Length: 119
Image (tube, rainbow, N blue to C red):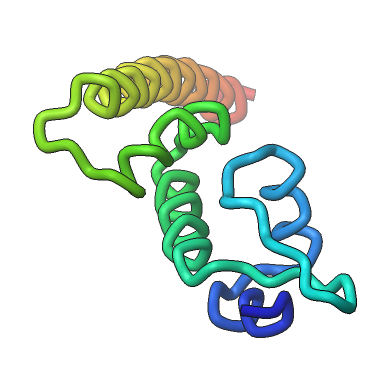
């Protein structure tokens, strides 16, 4: 599949596609006789997997570790489970920090309102 077709079907930009190539998270394309890139069909699924992973906050380094299990799924795969559990823990930590920040902001807002009402 040529570059233009791939970026249209995947809904990404050419720059994003080149970035994924540089980072080694998609199967490298073959080159035709005229030098054009020719991507295998599975690259579309790889890109969809990458985008899905990014949508739940997985960094590209973690997605890179999980790509082989997209290509050759292994039920009960410990490597994939470890990646997912690590991300769940990171999200839990972010949520805790956000709750704390929200509580502090709420206190400051109450103090500000009280100062405004008193003054």
